[in-house]
Image (cartoon, rainbow, N blue to C red; front, side, top):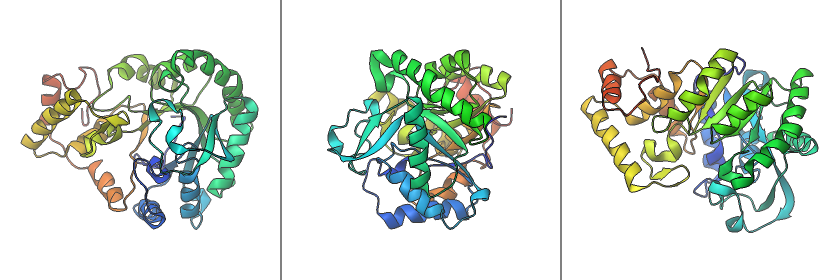
Length: 332
């Protein structure tokens, strides 16, 4: 597999950018340290998360640990400027309101070659490191760019993708791909370039996997690419929250999750464990990266990823058509 994670569970740092709430600095630092003490060695971040805040916090928290002992990925496609803006008025597609508690620095899109190189340089400074292992081209999909997303995609393929391919060939980075919430741009990238894998958020999860299973996962398996599953809890609804796809969940989705939880309770199973283990069961998946903003969640996530789940439970989900017929199931 071309995307290599030192463990099946990594740490997604979007919450460190003050996603949904204003997280105290001490709590953010303690969460990263808890991840380290629990053996997590794969950390994913992005300039977008709090306009650089997540990268700054992650860099500070990891500064005392040996760089050769962990794998680090970040993203390109947005630049963080010194200029400030009103965080509540950012036009950032479906994630527009996520980081109102982040830094006030202005965030601008830039998928060009120069923008990509500058983004990596800026990230290295914020992360207090000398290198990035994997780089994802961030959010080149319809959920952020509307009907013009294919034009943005083309710019990224001619700019960022070629720049990252060159950096990989030069040994500056280990690999690259897309970091997106949609399957379509991943499929297109496979047709036009040579990525190493994808960070796919929300599209190979317990609640939403059919499209990815049909269109993307077989091709990745065939080509030896790795999928990092972001958002395995689908923005929190599978972890006891009320968000799905970064928005308040609809009554229909709440009812669907409630139905799954009822079955899980019957089998004495935690739905969070079901969510993590379902995503990990596909052979193309290199890792899952649930986010966390509280230290105690780290050990919980690791335990959930390995807690025993009866085979009959998975068969019941399949019988009730709550998972796709051809989706790989744990232990199968």
